[in-house]
Length: 330
Ligand code: 3HC
Image 1 (cartoon, rainbow, N blue to C red):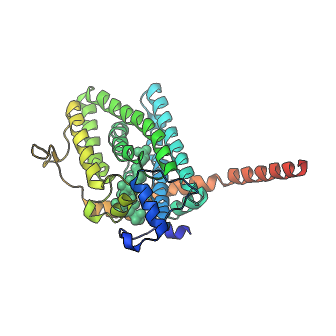
Image 2: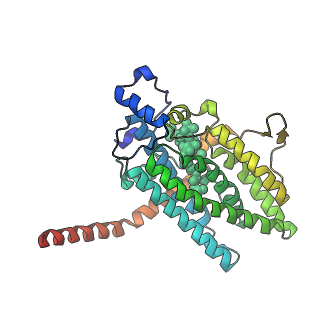
Image 3: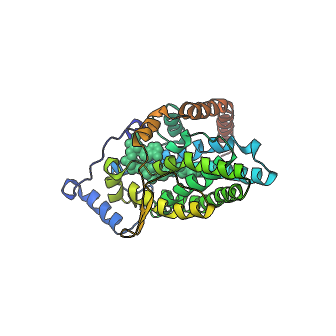
């Protein structure tokens, strides 16, 4: 089954005359804003699209722990260390809510992890970039969690009930993450000239990868149209990218930092910023596995999975023993 949730290729929005009566009734529910729940009828494509998106999202939360976990032992103060530790733990929790939401669609967590570990399923491109110094932890919280929130707030209204409910909790925690990142940036920018230069350098390196998090431009997005018809996605990739730029540029100005885009300009007519697109060839290269840290990230996940095998086996044996005991007592 799960081979079918990856590499789905280009989606074509289904026309009403192609739909069975069941599918038409389903679409009516979607259009009325009803939530779809696990045991209810849903088109196969809807289920697969959700498994793909929720699975990739869960993997992103888990892989996203790596670039920040790398700085827990080197955080500059005890307070910063405690905050970072809490944030990284939150990301593990987000991964768990999302794997659970995916499980309600008939795929197990082990199957999804196997797809991640074998490189068959994606996770967010952003986590294939390195965190070189402490300012990067600020930039990740500010920009990466900021972009994640921009994408995930609308997903609280996604049509699949368990995903929508997971997103409500996740968004609350992501707001704290974004604030802690911005707080680091404020401290760095109010510090020595060297610290401010580190903050600028972090912004320079994370700006375009953060813009890439929203996915390819709308003309190249293969899933958006059908996902939006199913209200799995609420906005297009470009809409959210624009909102992110409009929200983030004033925040950079407040810090006294310069967004690394010479074409960035407020467009009075549109009431929005004009900005440069990221280098899409770099994006496609990174999601094909050739980013600066892809091998390191996947290697770390595979090692963690292999190292934890004894524990999972122990749990399974213990659960089996309990079941046998309960059966004997019954
Ligand atoms: N990184 C990796 N792959 C990406 C990507 C990105 N930034 N953006 C798009 N892609 C992939 C898609 O998965 C798809 O590949 P596939 O067909 O093999 O599955 C392909 O590129 C084409 O893109 P589409 O626009 O057609 O794909 P979607 O309609 O799925 O849109 C998305 C992409 C906007 C990322 C959407 O899937 C989405 O909203 N996902 C939920 C949010 C999510 O996954 N966020 C992860 C961010 S990190 C995070 O939350 C951790 C936090 O702690 C910071």
